[in-house]
Length: 336
Image 1 (cartoon, one colour):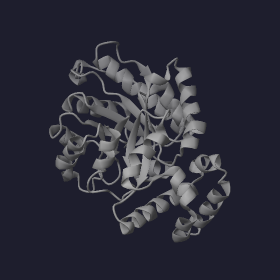
Image 2: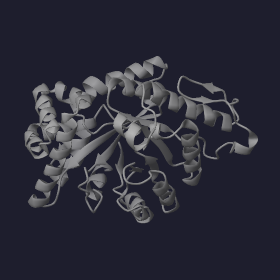
Image 3: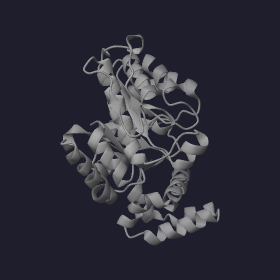
Image 4: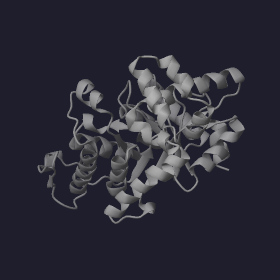
């Protein structure tokens, strides 16, 4: 199983060193995340300071951009990185798309499908395989003159991964994407009951097989070296899971375990602004089904047991409670 992680970049200048550290430890890939900083620029810097590490956006917000813009970014990053780039795309949610990015939110699954197909059509034209003639419901790309055509990429176009949670977005990944990043608010049971069937539906629609797509399971890991640090890591995880659990979109994971009432109560408390009370409702049973929790020596085995027969890769998620060693011992154990 390939092991990825998202680099905790509060300061984008650290891209010069942190991705090289991940490479030296033995990670297969390092992702960036679109929060306080642009997700592409740190990876361009990282590409100059690494030689082997796969570099990807995990994720870049697709609906804040357009297919031509994303095609240029992905194509150039593939060249700069020497063929090591992954264009990871996600949708974000309606309030952020409309109120933060001043962009259009509508039909998210269908729009994501069209973005991926449009990007691939643009790359297809640059590779000299067909004239650009993409006409969709949301996007139209029919003009490409030599002055704006970069020509074939020496490493070929990069793969496109999409992130998602619900059945429609997951099916879109199965239909058109090269990889799927499963949301960390998932349990083994929900991945088997909800995620894989939706992915299979999309694969069947496009006549593809499971081996044609890489499934990356973003998985929340909770561990530490001391009891005090372990308690702090658990608390941070409970807060994050309480937030997810209060959101109707993430109910299917809780419903898989018969925890519908937990969602209702978390949702009620969130509307009242009672965030601390929410955290206490995420007990050990909930925490340990959704996150991988344990002593450091146990984590690799628990990750493998959680994801066996489900994922091709794991992306270790630390929920804003980063480990200064970047989980080096966990990576080493998974590489044995």
